[in-house]
Image (cartoon, rainbow, N blue to C red; front, side, top):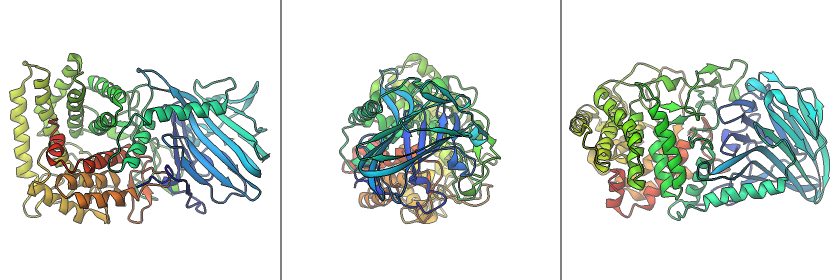
Length: 616
């Protein structure tokens, strides 16, 4: 199945709307920061000096006061866009009244070395060439600092315009002029003419550069990376594109993976479920490592594991569920001056969930570490000592309630998924001690607690009345994280209790065919969210392990139809297919890769179950 916007150009829907659909945006990345470009040729989101920095273009969250950067061809109602294959370079074709033009938008990158494989050029490049006839081009650059709160001042510095308070520099072959806090330019261009608008940030180049050379270098860098993947199995186009998106969400300095490059995009239009996702969640760890190594990107897997274990080493009594891309977290705050996407307030930056207790985190970290050791044999003694400390913590604390994987902002509960992942932590710790020959590890105590967790989950986490595992002890509610029970080897995928749970989740949490929400309980917030795409793709994997490959394949194909015009996924969609939540969402793309790999291996049941058990 082809990926829209990747293998074929696609027209852009929704231009008549005053608020563009979330998934109509293109995502650009230099692996240091990211930008979202709307179908109207406007950069509506751009954070400097890195992913977690100030959004100097924040029109995404307020079309009145958020800054923006427009480069548009007048008289073009429906531009056609795609990513150049194997890259995050956006190509846009404009057909206007008097002619046609093609543009490329990208954040410049070049190849680095083993320590830092991608090097950011710290330069947003917008390039436009007239193919036929004549076109009128219009450009406006209006950065605003403080997430749109403050206008900037421009001044001339040689052949470059500088907005020092925003840390930006502007150079162009267009005749820009200052208009208050906005740089404006317009021109009529003729066949064969090319114009560039280059916006540098941070330590970007202060001198003139060749945009054609930057384009070629950036495409070459992306393609050399993406071509390392030799996967040709089920959903190969989607898998390769998702891997490129994940690479774009990986921070160049540390290897940290962002959940998404955006903040405060709503899980319900007009609602209050608006969170900042510009952080690294440890729950992504095992999925990311397995995806990177399976697709031939071992060095990126090593970098991420080093980042993960460095943050774990610095953790206190509780392992935080999420950290910033530099290893720290800030406080959550509300930006009252912004109206939010489509009027969805409050607009939050920072994330309070960093201070929650989520015991599933420990399981994800140890699961990633075991997979890494099985694949490379490279865990060091110092790294194992860090991990061993966290296994000890779970052995001592698994009986406590926690906040759970979905970060519900209420009292702690005995969530079944948290208990299952505590089991994973202890199980992986036992197996790592054996692999590393650590005879001093308290393996007997870990084994006793591991078996006790398993027995308790079976006794208290499964409700025979509804014939399903449940959200939490003493509850009859479901949640979609229960689909991971076979995916981590807690029970076989064809265990009758697992199969019954799969069917119950599909029935009780359905939003639309192929779509399920993550839970249906009252979480203390008004309104409700949409279908959670991660869980929908994990349903594919669970069905494969249950031996229902045909159902799983049909479901996968349906879910691929919910990608945006450029093959990108948000966190959620509603029943009508409207994208919701932060975008593009790493967890969704990771689950897509996992589902495709499981479908591809569905013919070898023994290998599939061994993989889920992490026994190979």
